[in-house]
Amino acid sequence: DALASRIHALALAMLEASSLSETITVLEEKLRRSFSADEAVLVLFGQEHTFGELTKMRFLRVHDRHDEALQSFTTFLERGNPRCGQVRDTKRECLFKGSAPEIGSVALLPLGADSEQGILAIGSNNADHFHPAMSVDFLQRIGQIISVALARY
Image (cartoon, rainbow, N blue to C red; front, side):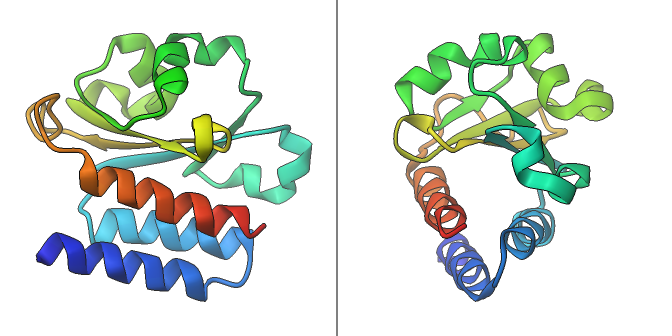
């Protein structure tokens, strides 16, 4: 029930956001405060110039979907399902940069149909926090909420 309430509050806050910048800011704040994410990164697919000043946000990374830096995510992107567990050093470094050594486990959420919008990565310093055997139903719902909120812009 507590998790469902936090997801509901996230959905309401994102619906109330009136711009892409505000939507991204609300998402980052909710992930850190309500979901206790040690680290979180929103990877959106596109060209940096399209996002303008938003690319200066610490939480946001903009990449071309076929960027060489994202090659290690090809299987994840093709499957289009949330994934939890420990990730290889190359993926951790790509996502979390300087914070990568502290990240023990990650939840990866595809955004949009066929991951067309991007990826949300939520990192935990606890290696067992996100594990492959955990249910991903709630993560899938969070990904859908985020996708719809982002699609407005």
